[in-house]
Image (cartoon, rainbow, N blue to C red; front, top):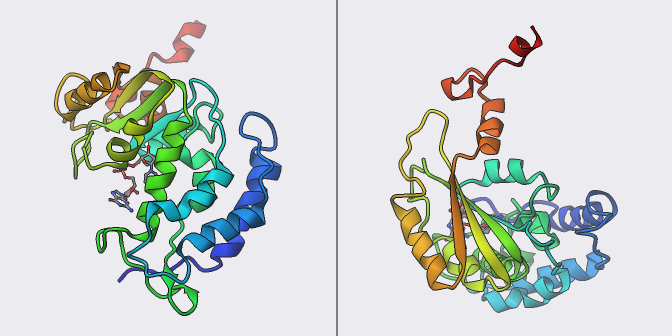
Length: 258
Ligand code: NGD
């Protein structure tokens, strides 16, 4: 049974907005002075009092235009199937900037919402995106993804999971493939980072499987790529949670003190 709209949606949304502006990103480069109440009104207008399965991407246009920011050069990061590790690595915009670090994605991340004809929002039950074609949050994330992709520039990063169970590392029906890759504009190079679970399996790498299809799609769009299997920085992050794994046995620093 699907849950309904997140309780206190409005308060969370507006609270997050103030937190973003006054605390998390008070300073350059993601600083913004957008009005939080205006943002909420545009967001709420997009889906409220409407059938939850019939919200077109265009409904979110005003919200997206108002919240839009520039992403610093060489900092944009996309992810597919790698939510946790990609965000750990990005460090809330310090190392890289993901959609969820921009105002557009930050305000809505992990929330549930859908409309109700009579009361505005349905707090009892929302359809899941598999239940209908133009589900309210799916069209939101599609518009948000497209906008984010059009606002990154320079070298951009994409983190994929070469151990992914349910799907190939790169699939044509992912948000990345449908809305982000086609919207890239001022980009030089796409750096593909393929991570694998420390205990495997190594299902796909930079040189086999769906990642080859991705490389073709990238070249066809006129960009170049660079592909890295398990770069040391990612191994080190994974090892923080599993220091005893065989893959994590590094030269012991104490030995060099003698
Ligand atoms: O068809 C869908 C669908 N497929 C997966 N997911 C879907 N949600 C729909 N409404 N409709 C969910 O999207 C899935 O449960 C995940 O929580 C999330 C991302 O799916 P994943 O990991 O397979 O990767 P994608 O390439 O499809 O989307 C991630 C990229 C990333 O570069 C973000 O900038 O697209 C942006 N994004 C898309 C959707 C949702 C972010 C989010 C988000 N923050 O919730």
